[in-house]
Amino acid sequence: MILLSRRSLLAIAAVVDIALHARPNPVAAKSLASRHDLPPRHLETMLQALVRCGILKGVRGPRGGYELAKERRRITAGDIVRAAMNSTGEDSMPPVPVSALVSDVIGPTVERAGRSFLEKLDAVTVEDLCRQAAEMNAVRIPETADFTI
Image (cartoon, one colour):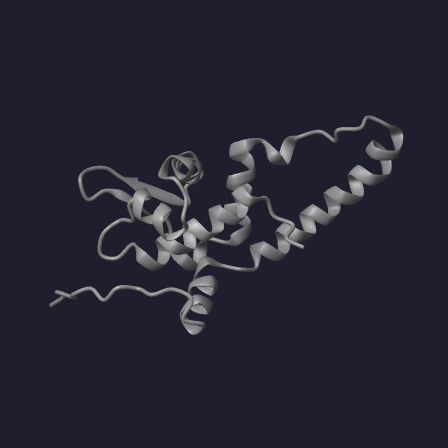
């Protein structure tokens, strides 16, 4: 059972994909969408939310796209999930049923579990996920010429 919303799962996948593919040029939303079989329009709002939260940086122009705003090791899965939840208001939605049982017992229990879940995600960095993807050959990174002197 996956406890994350599809949007949160996609946000983590997008940030890790950008971390893996953003060299030497930023990753275009269109390329990202094609790798994950999604319409680019669907990704843009989420990517913009990640920019607003300081996880990604948008680069304009013909070779524009998205790149990480911070080092891989300084971005956690928890940061990404919070950004995705904040962009849709998922984290602040009140419980649907209104009763003492929900507000006094079930709500606080679920909230504590959610905090614990996010704490676990805070221990996982984008660097960890990129390293795991490389070890498992989960993605193919195209070779690029290195003109560094």
